[in-house]
Amino acid sequence: MSVYYGTDARLISARDWGEADRLMTFFTRDLGRVDAVAKSVRLAKSKLSGHLNLFSRARIMVTPGREYWRLLDAEQSSESKVSSDALFFAQNIAQFLVSITVRDELAYGFWEIVSSLDTIRTTEALNRAKINSLRIVGMLPEKDDLKIFFSPKAIVFIESRAHGECFADLVEVDAFDAGIRQILATNHMV
Image (cartoon, one colour):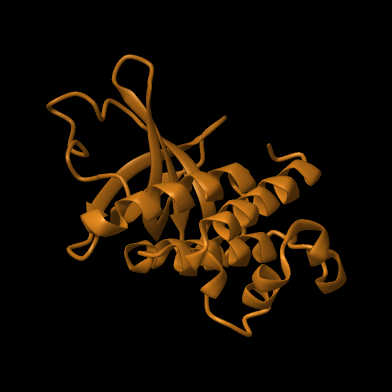
């Protein structure tokens, strides 16, 4: 007997798979990260063709498969598109989330981040989302160890005592990004 799950989701990554399939990575409200194969979706006659655009919100139905989930149905939400001024930031955070999670990981805290992709329009908001993501997966260093990775200005930002004044300076932005990469390397995620 097959088991089916319906959940709200946001498509954050997709790549062609085989002749006509596509492997899609969703972050879902109820199941966490789901990597699902959409069978024959690249064919013109596919019922899913055109219903799932990158970063779109949708109500999906999936069933477990041997290696990946199988996408059975999707209904794209009307408020699902990421605006063009938020696209760069959406791509950046999506790549970051894929790099720090594994499929079928039940990290529910990510739903809040991916459901607000269209509101991430500044370097400050992007870096706040990255810090929150590291916190969710338990990779953010303890308060005393933050100085190993970040400048004092960045630490104040991370501890949420200030806005992103440190991101007005390009040197600080580069140093912050280097700190994130160093945390990922320390956790063998690079």
